[in-house]
Length: 92
Image (cartoon, helix red, strand yellow):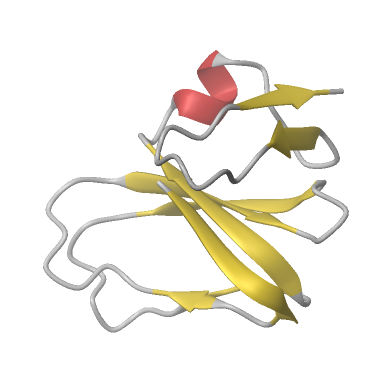
């Protein structure tokens, strides 16, 4: 799931009522991955904060970034048309 914000800001996510592990990439307005966090179920009190202002957050299955050889510093390309089918990819 891609979370889109109008401008860069510090973001916070948490695992309320989530029973599966997730990975979360914080992405700046330059569309580069700034950090990748691994979120575990049962950590409802833990806040997963971005270390700096970001504009996007990409939430995936826990091993998706590693399985696709995606890491911090990679660029994410996507368009946000009115159509709910958004196209996106990751490049180095």
